[in-house]
Structure formats: C-alpha cells, structure tokens
Length: 320
Ligand code: ADP
Ligand code: MG
Image 1: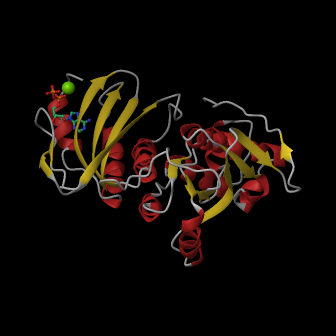
Image 2: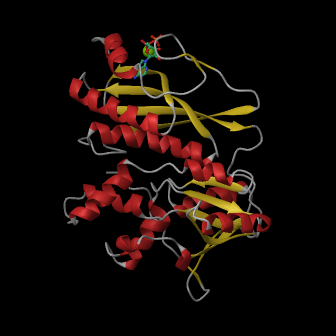
Image 3: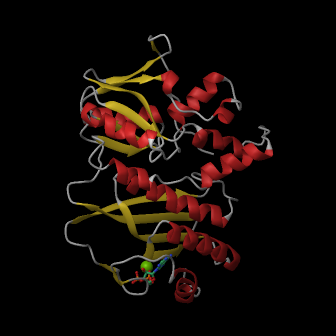
C-alpha cells in the first residue's frame, strides 16, 4: 500500500500490546526478540480471508479479535505462553475508520493475552489478515499431537458445536433469537483461546490439539500420529443446553462432531495422570469432559448410549 504506508503503520500498529524480550519491534527490517534460556520458541500462523473465513462485511473489531484468537488457540494447544506476533495485512484501501476500529480491538486483545505486535507487512488487495504468533514453552514441555497411547483417556475442554452453529448467523433464512445471536456471534468472533488450560496440561496430557476442523477430524489427527484409533462416547460429548434447542439432534451432533471452529482443546491423558486431571476438574481449575479412550485399532468409532458402535456421516468444511 504505497499511500502513506509508513504513517499508517506508525499511527495504527506501532504500539499494540506489551511483552518482555522485544529488543527491536515495529519499524526496522526485522524484529529482534530475546528467547530466554531453557525455552523453546513456538511459532504458528493462520490467515483469514474475507468471504472465506468471515463474511466480507464483518466489523473490523470482530475480524481483529478472531484473527488473533484463532492463532493464540494454536499456542494454547502447544502448552505455550504467548509473547509476540506479526501481522500481514492486505487491504482493499486505506479506510481510516476501519483501521482505527481494527487496531483498537487488536490492542485490547493483545493486552489481555499478554503479547506484543512486533512487525508485519501491509499491502493492497482483497481483505486478508494473516497473523503469526510466537510463544514460549520450557524445553521438553510442549504439548504435541504425538504421544497418545492405547488406553489413554480422551478429554475435551468447554462445550462443542457452537463454532459450527454460528454459521447460521450468516444464513438469512435462519431466524435466531437476539440472545442466541449474541452468544453465537461471541463464539465466532471472540473464541477464547484455552491458554490457561494448555499450561495446566503440561506434563499431564500425552497429546493435545485445538478443535478447529471438527472433533472427528482433529481427534483423528491425534490417533493417526500415534498409529492408534479412538472410541468416542457420543452421550458424553459436552453440548450447551441452549445449543440443543437450535436444531434437531442429528444436526446438533453434526455441528459437534464435524463442524469445527470451536477452539477447545482435545487432549489425551494416561491412566496415571487421570486423578490429577479429575482433581483440577473437581477443583474448578479446568473445565473439561472425558469423551472416550484411545484404542489399539485405528479409526474413530462412535459409541452410542447403548454401547453400540454407530456410523456417523462426516460432512466437510462449509465455506460461506
Ligand atoms: P520492508 O520494506 O523492510 O519489508 P515494510 O515497509 O514492509 O518494511 O515495513 C516497515 C516496518 O513496519 C517493518 O518493521 C514492518 O515489520 C512494520 N509493519 C509493516 N506492516 C505492518 C503491520 N501491518 N503491522 C505491524 N507492523 C507492520
Ligand atoms: Mg514490506
């Protein structure tokens, strides 16, 4: 974006968030970051494209929050603490009101989650937001998708299905009550990265990831990485009561199993750590539900309330 590129960056993006270790931030050819001894740098990037990942007319503050939070969710899934991020912004034009709202919301969230914007790129083109987050984890303590063993218990944080249900917001043929609309909107644009949970799971979970593609697909990733399968107890899946009222049981199950965009953590726990996890759940430090077990045979089997294996149709990712 040749038009005032430098003043635009200086004005809107030079003071977003705060974090230790920034030797050189926005304004030079690159950022210079100090990684403390004994820590690994965890890096992840995610791109949001208007019309694909959010509606083209979405509010700039909503876009900013979603863009940062879906990235922070990846750090949470690694058991990392956020520190820094970069922002590659592709804008159709230099709309000052848009930039003001976008950068303000980004600053509030950066502050809340303890990370600082240390650089980026600004170009002209169809609206696209790419954020790269960087976090720290003590060496050897990161949570990864590899490491589950047969017999490990499968857990998920929070409740599932709301991310997929939120797509109804963008379907003009669906009527939603105001309160439901608000809840879904918050879930879509302000998913809560489970950073505290990720930290608490270090040393206890054998594998972890965040649920972004849908539980079946994501648990499938954990299973494949360890050449295992899983039995999933359908009756145990955590679903908010209000969500169940929005559609028939089959549709709700579809949202929960295949919908994605929930940004909860799915993790596996060896039997010897089960008591520690249960203790945190009972103590209110961790909101999580046991939803199944890892199995030596491959594939994810869905088990109904009668203990029978049932076939579940897997639907693909839905774009706008
Ligand atoms: P270069 O031409 O050396 O790549 P740029 O002109 O792209 O530098 O950017 C100048 C400075 O502004 C760099 O420090 C870069 O990291 C920063 N920057 C550019 N765009 C953004 C943005 N959207 N958010 C934060 N920092 C940015
Ligand atoms: Mg550049």
